[in-house]
Amino acid sequence: MNPRHLRTIFYASMPRGGWPAQFAVITGWHRGGAALDRVSNEANHDSLRTEIFSRGLLFFPIATTGPDLASAFEPAFGIACALGEGWQLGRQFKQETIYWVDEGQLALVACAGAQPLPLPLASWTERVGGEMRV
Image (cartoon, rainbow, N blue to C red; front, side, top):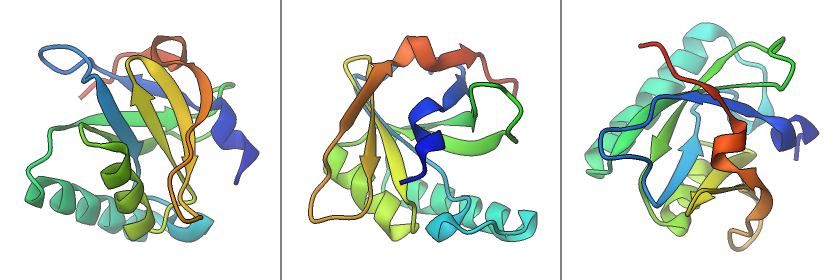
């Protein structure tokens, strides 16, 4: 697991009706931890959006970056779903980790292994650096 994932900052606008009680944060970028070109990353992101939409899940845009804001912003989705479904989506899209928010508490979940095991990080609101500009 990349140690930078422990310190990620999120930019997101609260969905209409407020934050879901439970949601996963998943990106389609950097499959398998590889540094892919922008065209490949955008195609993977679009494939993830199509998969989420086909499942009929509520989702909203999020951008992630490092705590120093020096890292590039990476697009992701907040997806209202059960932990198991979010973890399976992360595995399907070859992610090293996903983020899990449960009742306002943020956790990091490795996609490897036999089952999802959330590692508590912080409160969600402590890690939201600002609103997303769409």
